[in-house]
Image (cartoon, rainbow, N blue to C red; front, top):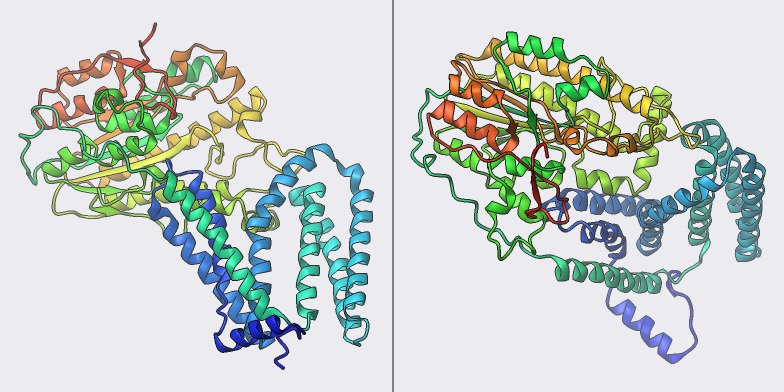
Length: 599
């Protein structure tokens, strides 16, 4: 009899084994288990994540599972045993790890370093239990001593790693919980290595179970996935359709920041004097709007309204406003009026990675410049629920003696890439006018940079985690925000200098922020609401008309910024809208609850 089969006495069992021999059982469950948590996360973020975001992580997960299975198959010479062990490893690093992180979040605040003897005692008890289990499984075979010795060696090595490496980076409570978890996974793997047979039957059962889980996730996605209501882009205002293509138009650069508040708020609330920077920009030909503010408290809503130069509720029919969600806002952004107007004028549209899944270009630009080795927002959220996040945290601590988390590493790299990309684009020659658009999620929180672009000096909690920005003390919050504003100013200055140096004709440059500092700290929540949306807006237009200067000098909101710019550059006559603040969240993006600015 094949050693993979467990001998069973009943006729029905023998018939089942005969069918299994006749029809090969494929090893499919590792791939199903790998895809299950990915689809589960996607099902909870349908309104924020396009389906295309699943492709790359799905390929990585399936490819990794296949690589592990092939390696174990080559080592064990038993494909079904290798498949079961692969599934255990996949579940340990993905779905099981997500449960572990929830347990860590619940347990670690309730224990401290004084609980170390308890952790060690429980760990020793678990190791002894694992050795006893091995003895019971294989006591009649001499090899049980080798497996037990291996488990003891692993159990002795793991605490050394916990105390010398993991505890300083993760905190002792977190490190010991991970050690317990890995020890339990090691016991299961050892058991599977010792088990004599039955892996074909296990494979068949695991295939059906994993397929059922994956099928439930697919059904959940299919049931809740709805197409956006707003399938057609908004009509262009009168006058823009008459714009004709011309190679003589200037290049247009639009850099959208996030959380860059106005000069008065910087001085009065944060004690930061931004006048030297703004004066330097004025000397370069920029016109700084001193009374600028965002129309919405949400980045996505504010950006979509700005690029369509209109309020969101006016872009959607009244009959569908209540049922529309963020997917409809994303449709408005990707089909925005500014892109369509400039394409009509003969511009090549260039975009850099925005770092927000819903803003990722979908064929609405001519050139999308992005690094292939930087995770998207959805990939980053998924990776944070797996072993990869803790592994990277340990790696960063070993290199920098600071526990940077996955999001900080990815976002820092993306922001560096965007600013470097802007300067490189400015150096490239083009045969026609270009429109370059970039979004950078700074200087608002999270705080990633010091004033020189290095890692932000953030307080470290007892659990060896950098303190979240919303839990910072008010003095620490002020210091971190000022540092990041200073660094943003440096990058802006270098970007502007590069554009001016390499442009064949004076360019149009628009720098603005989707909102001010918001209300992300308890101290900010108690301040007047207009301060939360006061933002930076500065515009450079060669030969700027007096009417444009007057419009920028008055009260200005984001829905009017590109009305003013287009009127000057293309000599159109778009009327300016009333400047309003609409206090609505992402759960009701097309709400009309507006109040006049300043009231």
